[in-house]
Length: 421
Image (tube, rainbow, N blue to C red):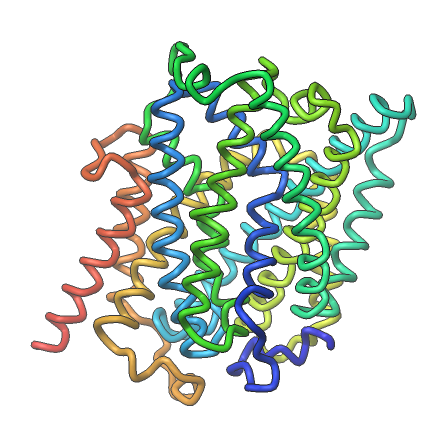
């Protein structure tokens, strides 16, 4: 089934619904992806052990709450995240938000292909003594990931269902290998100097995956019942992602290495490293591209699905060629700051203000621009940026959490006063 029939501009139909574990397998695969291992390792080396564990639990809780709420809205309405954005922000407002999402996701696509090619060339040299050029790998990976996306949700779903157990085994091997060398008590007793605060750690956990939590409706709209969407968020963010972050940290403590590939090779998991790199990147990037296509199609409904997918996949490979990894990660951190308040607006609008209009029928007479939504989004983004750059203290100790709460409260207040007026 081509994704062009997957209703970027209409609700999902009953014949397309699946059991929640199948959708959870996709969300779980994202948690197994290379960037999560990398972030877990970097966080471990930058925080004390206690702060590292606190940041993991708090960050995972925030992601679970946002993902579960956004995901269940998607499951109840059967609408993609981009249509939810259109209803909340109005058509013109949504075009700006959705294109920002698209730019961010193409950026992630490029970053992941960059990570992928770097890892494959390194592993080929270490395991088989082969010297490979990066660019053919980047093109091949781009073509493979784009082709999977053309076949839509079902193809990504089949791939994730096959690969999830394999990645779980590799992660378990890494954990068992670590605990053969160090006990949990010894791990907790490790003393080291922190270069980051708990708040920075929480922001790193949330920042890396927040866009996925906000666009969770893209896959949870296929779940039969909205409670399944809560299960999806719980297993992806509160269980698997937390475990992967933690395993990366413990393995980093045992090996003393700061690069994730060095850690995996230290434990003799050369082939396992290949599986994590290839399987994780393949599903994550297919999902990134799938969501980007939905975003562009929701903004420009006349564009044809397969062509859009091919063009966006090509742009993603170009982004990888530009070696954007170094400077682009800063930009992606900035984008995470921008996107968190979007969830605050949509969640408040759906739960407390205008639930009745969250249906495909209302889109034909949709507002051009919702000023309360835009003002609340902007305020939340400014607060998150100000906290992350140290211009103002965080109220809740975590900048991204401040921004969600502020955008939600401000939107609630503005719409309340608008009604009263």
